[in-house]
Image 1: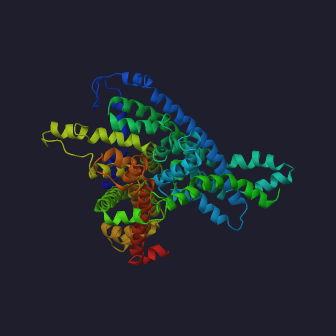
Image 2 (image 1 turned 90 degrees about the horizontal axis):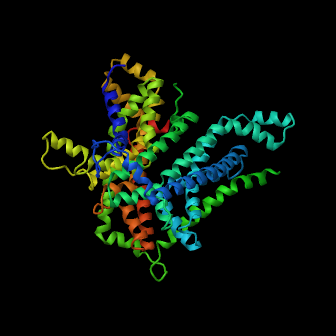
Length: 265
Length: 280
């Protein structure tokens, strides 16, 4: 391919958006006691240090638990709702559809503040349940959108064929509907997981004083100290996120996920 | 099972979450923003905003930082989108992956990387000083520039996606027609490509502007304590000062001014020269 100006700019932008990772990962292997790039010497001591930090280990497990539960519940609720919206076109389904997508139009900062105010009133502020509910809320719109997209090409005659052959509604759903929607549902689940796992702005208002999530723990720590420990924890998170991103790409495709129509493939 | 029952059973769980975690809390927050300490109705939380220049200055900074971010993401993002629209399937896939994948990794971590790069003894300053280009380290962080760099990195993917989507839908024969009629490549760009990609530009700029206006993490981490924006101020009112009515009012003022500016902007553009692009 001919080297063009566009190509050069594109390459530079790619380097820019990936620069944070290209800096963080090498920095985490420094032997020095302070952050430096390029790193000085080689050591894995900053990874060993993570294990001595209960706040990071605990918040890591809190984040995982939260993200898994969010992914499962948001996907379940979102899929059921999307299914109803698509299968039964009823008066008001348009309203319900836009209601379900509406959290996307409000900044997460405001969602966080509103949830804090209300949860304080009903007494679940600072509980894991409150935190989980808010993460489910911000994930549902993505699931609804993904599953609706999946359903738009769904062929209902396949379901009809199942009924005609004598299958029960449950059997039809389990053996026909679900497998056809699997890519949309799985990517909804992975996307919900990442939405929850990365979230700071909503969690900020809802975590309990003694339990925190990993991104929030990093957020708080790096406002106090900037040392290679932040780099080593961040590297762990980057790696874990990458696994899920690759999964997402394999199952659904990032282009499709972000709504890029790639008809010209 | 009747159809109505099925609809209720399937949508109720999601709607209950929506109602209990979003709609009722938002209404409560809105009502709270009109309350004083005696819990009676007042407009003073909103009035304060217009009386005290402190708040207006911070709103001004929030808007300024967001506009710079829009400009930076547009200038950097447009060529990327153009490259993607011209690339072959495989190349396009690789570029898309390289732009979108970082977007799915926590913004806290990306900001941390930038802090390491841009700090006083960071990589850029150390390199420039070693080369003898500068004597004093440049201040790239803990000011408005730092916030703009962080936000540009955080939101450029949205801009690229919005523009690429509109570029993909341009009929390639238009470019051919332009060149047959003797238009230069620059002329073709300004008379064909750019006007037809305007809906994408409007979508991208609107989205990046709204996201920048309400972002909290990046300004907090890369703007430092003295360079505040409205979301940081609202956070402090809610979590430190514990003045919930004022914090709520600030949040709604932010939302209101964002919607107002975006509406003005889209009206202005759509009414002007390119009406036909948007009506199609």
